[in-house]
Length: 330
Image (cartoon, rainbow, N blue to C red; front, top):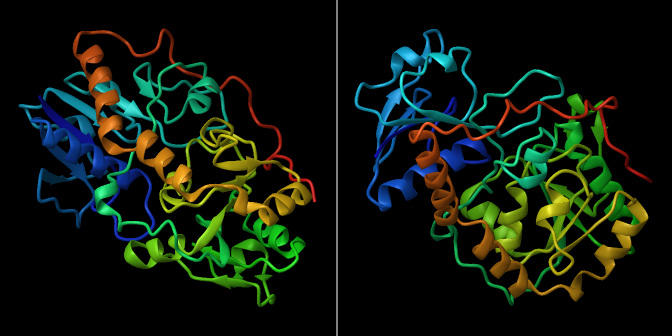
């Protein structure tokens, strides 16, 4: 099968990156099992296993699809998607808070994500763990970490800082943010128990995760998936977060604790030693690997190639969020 993967980002990813990381790993898995992959991606991209073409956002995407492609896998929804000349599907990676329709061949990234749009079609994001350094699950762990774009208020880095401050002596490393951030309303954190490491990736990020007692992830929106979760689990870190979006689906009682109450989360952090690094690691390896993701997508490819729609009706958000931020109890 000849598959075109369309993504508005540069591949491969170097530091933080969600959509492009998934597009990269999916394409590589497809090639491993005998399929031919072409990427239609942002200028500056390259690949040693697939053909890359430059996506021109000033032109119709449908006009940029090579003639010999069997199926197109979009990682965003182009305005001219209905003009796609071959079967296609679309992975929806984010949230949209309105009643506009998604394409009938939309695929969501968790069961909760799909359910909120009236769909039952979803595939978990998967990572190629061979690209990650081997974790030392017996390593000494001295702090917790926050992983995400701290400038996004829905990620609630301030809530993570406040939670750590409520513990007796725990420390927090913020991966993905800086001490001073104008977008956060002049956030300035003086506590010596909080350190900021900016946008990190590769070996540096993996080393920081491997020294952590757990991921502190008190998001205030319905997280569609959250790659910070499997990446942290892989390095033996249990997850302490809010019960919103996919978190309530992904984080079982054996690998973490969920609450929107600061006091409860702080107490759970104090008892983080109750969780097994080996259990967290094996859970991530088993459930969120790129091979399993590719197998799931191949099943959906076969359905659209057979002329089947992936949803009975175009998915639409069932309930519009009237508040910008979900509850966070201090």
